[in-house]
Image (tube, rainbow, N blue to C red; front, side, top):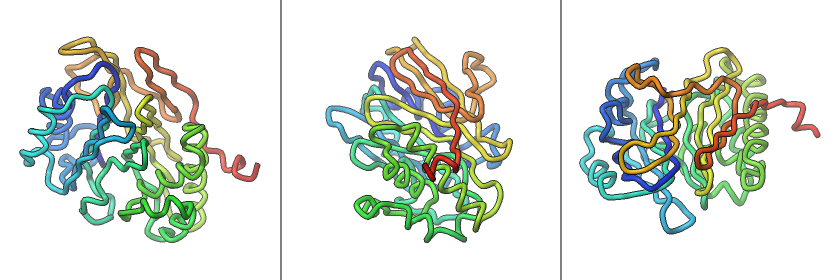
Length: 265
């Protein structure tokens, strides 16, 4: 599965998370631990927030460790909030449009996991995307569909509720037309002001999620990511079935419950 990392706090160079540390995201993409695939080489992407409300976005299909443009960009760009992702495909093609993060307006989103049997109901999932949002449907992944469904469910006003409603909808589809596991979801999303993350699964195999606050190097900030280094014992695991909001030093962790019954209300 995929690997990702996100940061919120004092502005730092992107390389502080993406490429420089010994256990950086690029290192993880080449030598992944706690993951079914040891190498993540189906593309990568970075979304970062700067002077404008909308995030900058850089994505490509090359393995992250072999792209000199990525190293140059991360060495020069500073940001106080960014998302970075290396992809291991669960079936869709390796293309730039299928690489995470995905962005619409000020929102950015990335995902590690799967929707069971997605190929059997791709059209049904696309029909859940509101017409004015469908123009942003550039790729073919279940992750992008989930993001656009969440936007239609009110992500701007109620991030947790929108993610719960979107997850409930795709779970219902997977149960009706797909296969188990109906949903495995470890995702990060941001509107440029707050960083949110969610860890959930309909079985007991939710992809891992960890967070920590760091005061090392050039700044102070909170970090959240899939994966963990055994020589970094200050990472805290987020329990399965959780929705997190990171704002400054504050971390709010609440139960995440995509209940299908709410859709009928």
